[in-house]
Image (cartoon, rainbow, N blue to C red; front, side, top):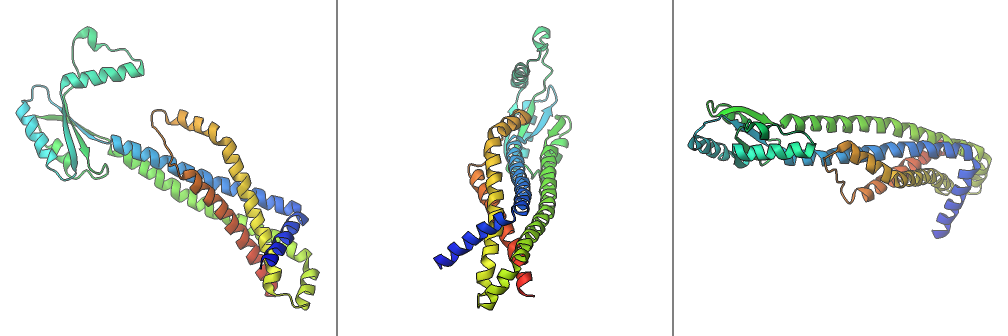
Length: 296
């Protein structure tokens, strides 16, 4: 068995370089497809990380009318907090809200004009954190119905919905593009192996006449296809390793204050996906090509 595998690998390697131009073209195409796969996986992981960050910040903020009695505010907070969708309700008075606003101005390097005027234009508010940022229930309706107490209700559900829409669109579009490119790569591998099979047609016929099994004939070509996938995967991983640091800096610049942190297992999962896809496509293309020839 070991001798048969060694023979298959040796013959596959010789066949790869015997049709060097076609093999290298197939390898480059495989590499481009795998780079596209890696970009899709990384992009979706980044969007998911951004979505988790935004979901943590999602809250409903109800601005309280100036002069509203504290007991009415407490009653509204209790009513909202009793709803099953709500995790916690926090009351922020005008002074605290003004201090937070001034802190934001300082962080942004903007001028605070309220200090000179002595006027506090920031209203008090109720901040509502939800158990699930995507499940609002009747919270917004309850706050909007509190006329005389609430002047406006601010919610960030649109941001979450927009990110979910972008993530879904990117996933669907990426899968479609990946399928199209994958089929193209498969055809290129099939044609590459077919050329190799036809070039060694007389040799194959002699092997069949002396009693060689189909598996003995087929496996060197399958190994040749797998080599196309492995070399394409190796080139892809090398490019990703070299580009990792510059790409990380670009992503950090683009996302600004959003702390995109990829899962620690992403690198391993990405490597497995790239190598696995390359091997499967290369081996499958070779198998289809040789099978078509042998069943004639």
